[in-house]
Amino acid sequence: MNFREIDRKSWVRFAIWAALWLLWTAWHGNWWWLLGLPVIFELCVSRRLKGWLEKISAKSRGLKVALGWLDAIVFAVVVVTFINIFFFQAFKIPSSSMESSLLTGDYLFVSKTAYGPKMPQTPLSVPFVHNTMPGKSGKESYSTALQFGYKRIKGFGHVKRDDYVVFSFPHGDTVLSKAPAEDYYTHVRMTSRDYAVKMYGPLKVRPVDKKDHYVKRCVAVAGDTLHVIDGWVYVNGQPQQRYPGIQNTYQVITTSPINPVTLREMGFNAGETWYSQTLPGYPALPLTDERLEKIKAFSNVESVTPNIDVYPPDYPDSEAMLFPFVETGWTRDNYGPLWIPAKGESVRLTADNLPLYRRIIEVYEGNTLEELPDGRFLINGEETDTYTFRMDYYFMMGDNRHNSLDSRYWGFVPEDHIVGKPRVIWMSTDANLKFPRNIRWNRLLKFL
Image (tube, rainbow, N blue to C red; front, side, top):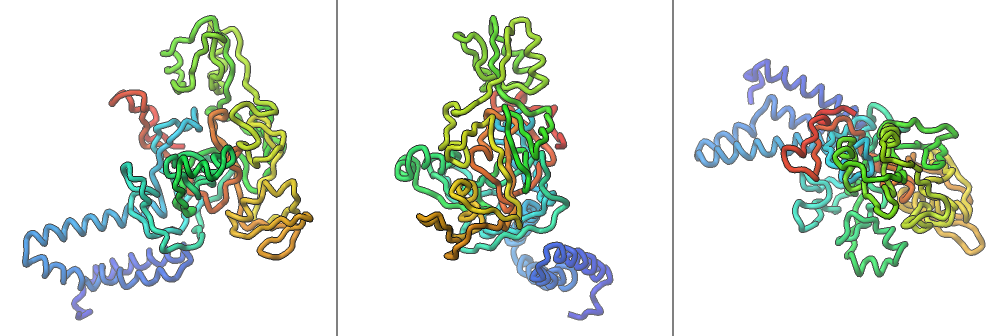
């Protein structure tokens, strides 16, 4: 190759892309990315590979077409995968735990740069799928033959109190093959491991970045003290702002059923408006502050009473369901006070608080923990009575407070489980209606 024959535009193009690549490398802080510079030089200046492929494809029209399609497919896969890993990822709301803020059937774009994208920990994965192959096979879409440690690139900010956050389900490291959406650890506590495996097994073990994704509101960040009093969240002694979408259930006594069309127009989920003839009325109608005032004004409504769960917890809640899964005197509506662990902070370990921190010590931060009969503790074989946290933790709750399996049921969310922040609803559909009536036009391209 004669460098004098290379046109100036090629060198300018190379200089621009090389500068961008250097900025990209500096953002990651991993200088191995500099090995990409020869590739950029080949694409912008040398073009030897392109010339070689053109010579081969010139011999056969069919081969030329095939190489053209291959080039387009590879380019699309690389670009979309690159965007999904480092910038934005699509996500669908699977359940009603965030109603009336985020609705079942909302399709979101989740920003990875809001809190900083995570480098892939399980890089050997099929593009465009998260953890299982499409269809009914349920087979994993990844291989754990190559695994990396946790590394997060610097983002535009940190998780703040009251943010919507997409994260990996903390209990999703072990999954029942025949009930993948259910919490394995809940099954074990309520029955036994042997029974759970026999009925719903075999078990699947997933790495952190291949756990199922959840979306909730972060109600408390690392270092906060959280307290739920009569269904309302208090953080560091201050009440949480009453956002419009937050709702609790109320017992609504009526002289006759409320018109279902009226309830639908008010935005109620049809599955949560069960009417009891014997009451008569609605035993658990989920109401935001705005809906509460409207319901009270209906002529056929006699009374509206909040459903407050006091100790002992109402069915199906119990000590085996509510974190930390021992008797605390807490319920879903009267929970805590609970301190949220923060990186660099230490706690003195006792038999009483060990249930709060055992999973952090053993699973999230990878230590061995042994509790001796005389009350002493061994961490990684060394005796200690304190533990210093290596990550920040968060407490997540759904806005649909009485229909949300959240941190009250599985505990803290570690920093390395944070995926990103929902930025925009790009599509929203109602599964109860047929196309095109199922499209919620008022939610399209709604920024959060």
